[in-house]
Image 1 (cartoon, rainbow, N blue to C red):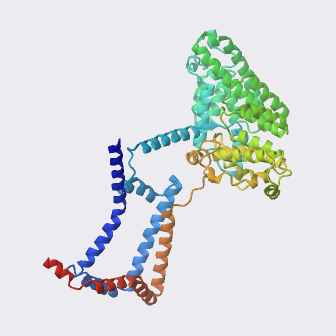
Image 2 (image 1 turned 180 degrees about the vertical axis):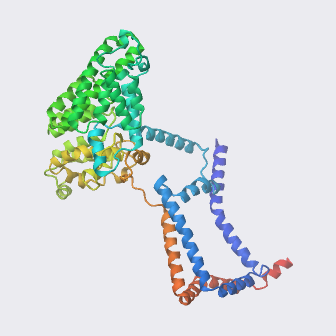
Image 3 (image 1 turned 120 degrees about the vertical axis):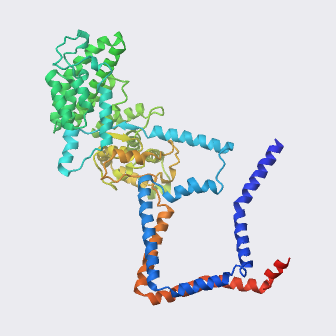
Length: 568
């Protein structure tokens, strides 16, 4: 053990010495060049170079500075493009990846570094899990809301990536592996066994609808849904038409009611057969998803049409009937509806059930809890008075709740404080990302405005937790949110980035270099004689300390030192 410790110490000393040895080598080379200046004819070569530079015309200097400005400008453009796309400097990345190992990088074989790499792997796995994309519980209707926005503005509010995720969700929720066994095509003049036919709702089983959910063209999907309805009463066909063809919420609600009638019949039949085998169980699970989806959308229609109490009752009944289906996050719809009714006691009861440490958090959970805490003190809260007398228990709870909410998603305050314009929320969100912040603020901004002083309290702590991206109450803020949000949000929206990235040094350096050389080229072209005098004065001033040092060295060392060395 003692010998191993000695070897490690010796190795560390050698590494330390090699780190600073290059400076010794640099000064040694300078001394050697000075000693050999006579045989190498350095003075003669410098005189020749000086004569050559004196014969150059101002046009040469204009071309030289102009070319330097052009090259540095191209480097600046490339660096800026690389930074905007990948969030880092290309020169810095190359320096760290390729030059640092050559200059004596960190040894990856030591135990400490292996532990660090394991920690990085764990944090990367955590980041991957936190960057999972979720279905937006409050997503809008494509036909009645998203398409109307497109008709008015000419902009597409949904990205292809977002719509592709929705198509995958529909295929997961509304289809199963046994659908190909249950064709609903009337052209197949076959009589199917009774257990394979669902007269009330053939929709989930229709191969026509299976094809419709895979279609990229909206008109093709709508045509396929109409084709399925011609064959049979199809619940998922009604769902598709309500989502994409209905131009108003009233029309969508009518279609969802027809879908509910068809879906309930199929659900009752599959419920009776669910224990007869895995195929029947899969069909029942699919029929359950269809029914829950329809009832949830009907509740959302009632909420949008102003029948908020009816919507609350429908959501409560749905959560009571299907308590295990948490993937739809119906409690977030319920929280928003209860806030609209200003039923804050009921909101607190819902939060007590879902704001649990074992359950995944969301901006709705964290910021609604902060809103309730702020509501108790916001009307009387004053930062100046609090700084003088200190925070009371209620104020401390409110501050901690806001701290917790902002640490979970730091993008939300910009939208709640209207420091940044809102857009239509996407159909999918990234928790702790800008997409989730937009989805939350789009529906909950009115509730914060209704509570007097709540936004003022949030404004007092709008910078929280800028220095806390390492994570105190939650895992460290993931670094993958920006990339995922750019895929989910439309191109005309400026994605909020946290923590705010500073411009790399090399972008600032190349920008300064480009501007400086361009200015020199312009001045040299306009005032060649004056710039020549300025350049000579600058160079003479620059080399004055070197000339002074050379004179002192020559006065100390004998002039015939080289001849004496050759004799030795």
